[in-house]
Length: 247
Image (cartoon, rainbow, N blue to C red; front, side):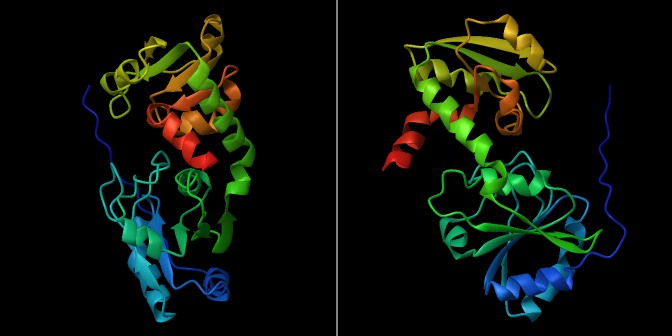
């Protein structure tokens, strides 16, 4: 079946609310990392003008799997997903997200989960014309459980690898690297179109699950995995990640 995907841009006016601008000035941010969801990304020029008028510099980028500069995907939740250089990451004082809802900006929180110093995420909802803030405190419990699952993964001997056959999310071949990286562990691959969380309980011998589908499953759906779950990228670097946390 042929499928055609079309963008549905917001037709209203997109600009920063006075509340958002006042907050950025109050915090004395000089350089802002600017991103938006696909509905609003085509109108970021006006937002840039507002920031530059207040003497703030703007840094943005073309993130992984996006079509245009400045677009943010909710599943791009790793620090390298935004394709920023090390110098750009260092220069950014805060991230500014333009859009409604918290799903997309939470990706910026998760992308900083291993960073020693977290940068604030300031949200501006162009529909309600209001400011909202997103921080690590919003997902503190989830991140704590995720770290626990990561530690459990290192000692586990029997792992279940969840793979979807959905285009754009299928990562079966990359997941085979787990068997090379951890030859002393036994991996069982579970392949399906849709992940049914309740069906996972039928395999009690699995000690920890490794998610290779949308990375947000490993975070937002942490509560649905009785045995714990981590994402493929973190599984491949578990020792490094935990070692940096202890350093």
